[in-house]
Image (tube, rainbow, N blue to C red; front, side, top):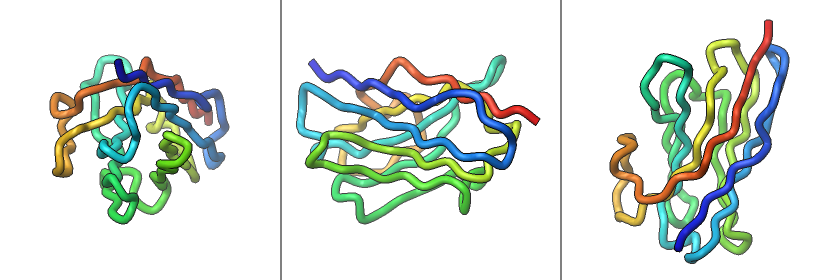
Length: 124
């Protein structure tokens, strides 16, 4: 059984930074693409970032490009999302997800495993 647990969310002022972590257990992290998604109240879950199995390729939503950075540490079975220059519109529940396929996907239904989510609130 694969489990993902996010941490690091919280309340931050606009312009501030947060680092989200995703701890993975039950299977070796290097077998997964890892993604981060977010969901704001009343909105659909949306793609934020993804990283390939080796960590050599990263992909971002246009809305976060240049401000967020996804990374992973396969030895620690963990993935991360560094969020800088946060804006109020970044407020959402953030989810990490694991995809066992060999291709990049920005679609939530393509991901096999999900964490419970962590709230990020950006105040003005």
